[in-house]
Amino acid sequence: MSEMSITDYLAQGGQLTNPSNVPARYRAELMRLMATFVDSELAGAAGFADIINQGPGIKERIAAAKIVLEKTDSADKVLQIMGAFGADTKRYANHHPWTDRLARDADIGATRTQSDMRLSVFNYPLESWQDAVVMNLLMGLAVGVQLKEFSRVSYTPLAEAFRAIAPVEARHTELAAEGIQHLIKQGADRAALNASVAYWWPRVAASFGLDHSTRASQLAAFGLRHSTNAELREDWTNTASAQLETLGLTAH
Image (cartoon, rainbow, N blue to C red; front, side, top):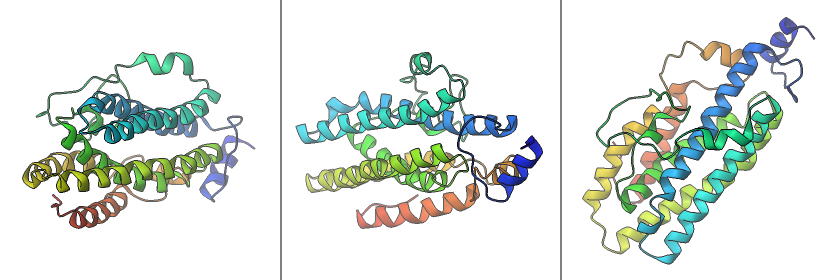
């Protein structure tokens, strides 16, 4: 196929299965998508690793350590696919300062820093165990929405990887909800939990990007996106609001 006919093929819902004959612009967008996921997983795991020993008990620390392990493994699954496109997988994981964070009161919206492709939300520091559990819940629900979308991408090996990762990430979100329930049963201050919700809510919302993306039509034509940023954010808002209500917390 010529590059033009491959583009037409993708626009009609076609699937690609290997790096050969992938159009240059498609490759660039695919690599961007993968790098964003890998960098976000590695940065998220690094941030959560720093909070493990603040867990209130052994079970909580084991759960947190498992989350760090599994997020790193999920990153590796996608990184291996990047390797098929020429990414230096051995150098990659050690190339970025995954633990770097901005000041707590920084406000960068959806902007990424210059060091890597992590979503903006992973540039903010976790303040405490309670704060980490709240962030893990809200971002976990966002990841669930995003993985549902990414599981339909037109590059079959990546879609399959995301479908395998989705239930693992869903369990992390369940652990976060269970963690909040446990904290509340142990007498945690709901006002403090709600303060964490208020802090993380707009930052997680920003991770869906701008409502009007200049690349949206190209991504849709490539079969790399099927829903708009606004639609995905609305899905997350509804899901997160309902989850918080069941926990007796307030959405922001």
